[in-house]
Image (cartoon, rainbow, N blue to C red; front, side, top):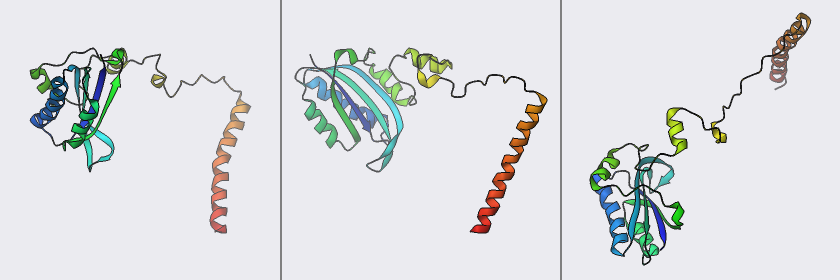
Length: 186
């Protein structure tokens, strides 16, 4: 059994009925050829990195399905010819890459279309739950605090403190003198 994933970006002006027609056509293609739809997710309307067919936004849809007799090249062609699909990609995936959530019921599908882009039918992972709760995952390098706390400086003697203040106040004066010289030369 082969597993496939189809990701496509639908036109941003499509309402619920138009979007469900585009998704329904892709589902019908898969099931009509003996395939089984394993996972469906409407990721919502998102801003595109660059304009595609003069559109800056699009509705992302992900479908995962299985089947032996599915001609994914024909599915590519059908998505390419659909004017309501801005971009698409159909790839073969491994069984362990199939998401675990079931295909939503038709009533739940309509609610998913109305939901904001952050909401999805996919189960939340540990990192997503921690992010929503405001907790940082120590295994993630991006979640490290970008500004580490400064260690308290050892107390300096009065002479060292005066010397440090003298150099700090001299630096702005030197910079101002260089600017005046540069203006007079130019």
